[in-house]
Length: 160
Image 1 (tube, one colour):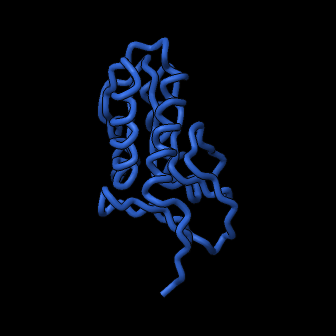
Image 2 (cartoon, one colour):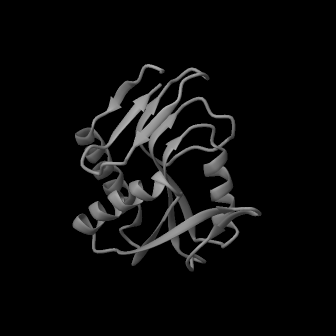
């Protein structure tokens, strides 16, 4: 079994989620609503955590959406045309998933699209970045970042 190194503890993840929520609010304080779109599966957990924090700090209407990978690419749920959208995932590894999901969202013509990532791996294969980042790591191509979310009271990010 590969050795795991703890990168973020549960408490550190919650602090980073709070910071991301404040950044989203600051960038959308003039909006009446913001759409949070999570990428399944663990991106949905991060989306829920961010939504919970936003509800505590902002008077924004928060709408949840999902971008689902299908046989013909990603499909977006919800009406997003002309609205402010934040696309959320747990880890930005190669960039492929986030790039394909962003392309699907952009086909629906949002007013703006920003991205939020809990953990950003600096070695990407595709040219996409995150606007809101919980933790950024310089890794080797052989290393892998994992977000463990099975127990919502014991979240963690590890490096393998």
